[in-house]
Image (cartoon, rainbow, N blue to C red; front, side, top):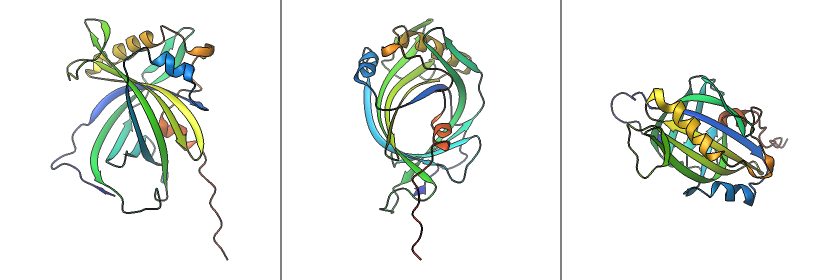
Length: 220
C-alpha cells in the first residue's frame, strides 16, 4: 500500500476524547435492542492494525483498506463515573488520516499487521444549549459525541465493544461525552452488566495483549 499525504505540512489532525470497553463473546440481541432505541447508522469493514514493531503512544491502522490512520495518545484526564452503570478510563487522542492505494498483496495482511473485522452501529449526538440531542448535521463549532456498538472478530474470536468519542471545542469535549454517556446509560445494560475499568481500553491496548495465530515451523 502507498500512503498519499496531502501537499504541505500534515497539520494538527483531529483531537478527541474517548472511552471504550471491550468484552469477549458475541454481541447479544438484548444489547443491540438496548442500543437501538437511538437512531443508528451501520457499517461493516475490516481494519488492519500495526502491532510489530510496537510504537508506544501510537495507534496505526489501515481503515477499511482506504486510509492510513495514525493516532497519538495524549494521556488520560480522568475516569468516567456513572454510579451503578459504568466506569471507564477517559483517553485523549490526536488523529491524522491519509488516503492509501490498496495493497497488491493477495495473501492478507503483511507480517506485523492484525486484521480486525467490524460490524459497527453508530449513534451521533451534539451538545447544544447544555442539552444532548441527536445530531442531524455536523457543525465544527458544536461539541459532538459519537457512540458505537460494534461486533469485532479477529484471529477466529468474537468480541464486542461499546465506545464514546467526543470532538469539537477542547473545553467542551468532556461535558459532551459525559452528558451522552448519562443519556445512553440512563437505561442499564441488559443482564445487569456494568462496564468497569478492567474492560476499559483502546483497540491498540487490547490487541497488544491478544496473542496472534501460531506460526508454523518452516520445513527442514
